[in-house]
Length: 345
Ligand SMILES: *Cc1c(COP(=O)(O)O)cnc(C)c1O
Image (cartoon, rainbow, N blue to C red; front, side, top):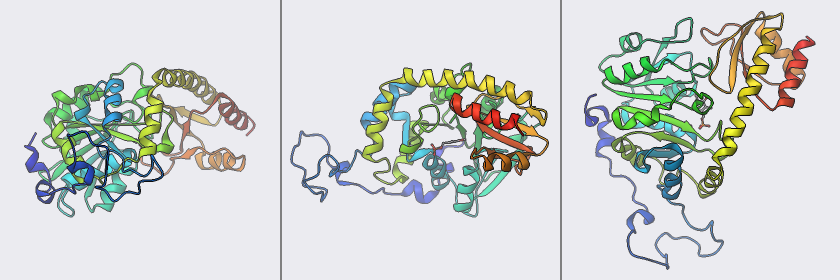
């Protein structure tokens, strides 16, 4: 890896971050807060929230097995996807490399930040080699994006290939593990961040944890990278309601395990039913709470389902996903309704 200063935009390296009232005060016991121009009434919502979400990170540290100082929390993964562009990539000069097809936000954030985006096509099994990804890089490549399990294909990306990229690439490797809780046989790469100073791993509360509405995303990385993210983020990027609701959800990780096992059971059932439909050509293997399937006329099936009030994701215009739909696993009753509609087509 290059040293961090070589990778970071010079203006960000030099940046003196905003210092909030709560940042400046720390230490002594205090009970009269007249430092932040808050209204003294309407507790508890009158006070600014902890800008570094310390209580929540302490709890997440236990659940995720990562030290609190190696955790960044954002307004969804969206924030943790946008930040590396703002921290590392000089607009109009630097570039990023990503697997293709993958999650759309990496490219949208590249376009917003005026950073060149270099997609590298997966193979027929939706896999990639380190050689192929690294061949797309040059001296201005700051970040490589890998999504595993990948969206929309559903499969885990080969762990050895990812580790090979991390070891050989001179810049930052970001592995988005939004669906890792559904991949039971694999250990999250977040457990390896202390061995890899150029690795950032993303997790989210939006999928297995059932909290998409509260907007809480996580990045796990070296404390130097976390410090850069904290310097650039909005001071109060995670609001109090979100912090409280996340604490509530984290009280019961077993509930999440129960949801996951029901969803995985349903996934097997729905995929087997799809394989039996006469117009389905292929049901791709998956490690997530959705699967990709190729059919004779994906647009036709999509339109038919919409007319019945059932919405799936039409991915048929995505590269390597011709005539493919992406199906999220729902409740049993929802899955039944989907299957009944398709059997009646
Ligand atoms: C759904 C999803 C996310 C979650 O994004 P949030 O902003 O945390 O809701 C992140 N990455 C991928 C690949 C996803 O599919």
